[in-house]
Length: 169
Length: 170
Image (cartoon, chains in turn purple, cyan):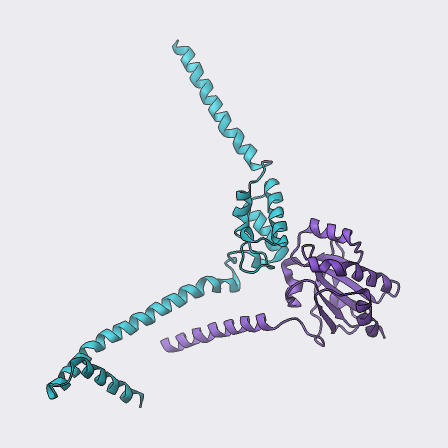
């Protein structure tokens, strides 16, 4: 009986350890996987549920005001948003990762970002997408599947458009 | 003369009582928190960006912003617990240096103790068995020494032990 308890405890402990290690080694959500659903409440108080946005291409950009490498792409993302605005089937969502609100709002103002942005409360969205840092961008096709993952900043507006355009056909 | 002394004594007590009550009210709100006050809260928090570095020792821009938030909240009169609750609501449980004692988190508190207790028990049992087997081994060594007095007592014990082990593994 004692032996069963001892081995049982050891196996449970090893399983927990294994699951933890597996999760930490998993890396980001990959292209072709269904995009994890989430709810984002923007800084303006609007609510966005990813599952409600099916039928649209959704661009999810993780950023933070303290992130220097997020700054160069901020204007390009806004320009891309503006260029698709009239179509209505490309949604941009900015997810502010581990940030403080006054600095985040100042950042959005500095770079003239007008598409919806909100805090990643309890870091639940970044954990669902298993991001490793910021900036990271996930582009989701109209079926709710991850079509593209960008680690690090976009280099230009043309790069962003070249990824989104094929998803609209 | 005595009356004057009593008046002065009464006044002194009144002043002391007033002095004791005023700072208590003033300290609770409005006073500028020092770096030590901020760090006392910061050391209980970890920023998810810089893993394994407590907030009071972390030099990144993100951590600086967080310390700024702690400063602002302390200035507004928030307590340590209120500030920690705010950070948990914003960034999740993992910002806490000590995870809350609930659900799966209990493992973090129980596993080290259980491992220590289990290890101690195994060690105790191992030493106990060793101790018990020592006189028997000595006896057996003595026996083989009686058979062959030229043998060294320690070598004899080692050989007996090896014989016993190889016999046991078969």
